[in-house]
Length: 241
View: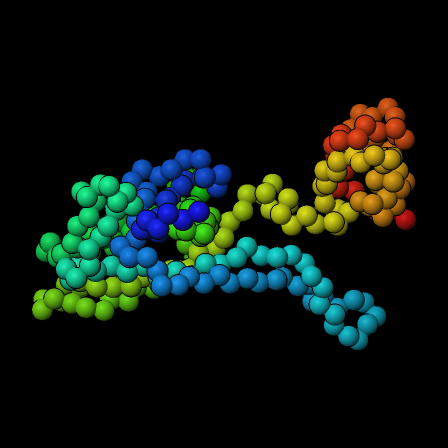
């Protein structure tokens, strides 16, 4: 439950897709919270036309990771006070004024977190973006920087970065979330009271004859008496006629 305290949008960079290793100095806290953020969702369809047909009937293939669109403000005009995430620490509160370089250093730090090339992964860093109900894992795919205000010598003192991120889900988590029922995918099923291996094989594969292969993979000796609560691994199969 919210306690009414001001919390800033936080972006943390990681070098690995499991989000275990945080990048050194790889944290960015927004100057001001965004007015909005946008999620884009896309469904991939298979539009291959079946042989011998004249009609095209798109079929669901998979749900692609969501995209996030988010704006970040940079300002050194002196009109914005930056408040820290901890309201008891007044040292975090400061007026953002120009120190001679405008917003150049701020932008470079921001770019280091989200745009810096990760040599091991051959792509930008993985990032976690969090703010309120928003918790997003992904990586940057596109960014446009709009410079809006300048000093007389042309040094920028206000800009908005319009960033797009591609959502990322670990492979094992993706399988669990999609809960795909296709028989060519791996499944883990929990035995319910009254279940038999042929019955469970029929539910997963649409044919009970594959229960022998399931028994072999799970090293089962009893096909018809299964303990309720036991988990059975159903491997990918190639269906035979």
